[in-house]
Figure: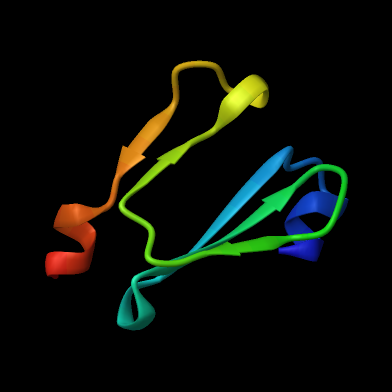
Length: 59
């Protein structure tokens, strides 16, 4: 994720399906882990962007 940010990514979501967890990599600050994660919201960087994770976790 650090490489993506070095190339201009403003937000990174690393999905970990086996753990039903997500690592959120913001532009500033430290990455954080959310578990169990059911829904993601991008916040101020991308207003209105949401991701429902139920289908992804279901495989």
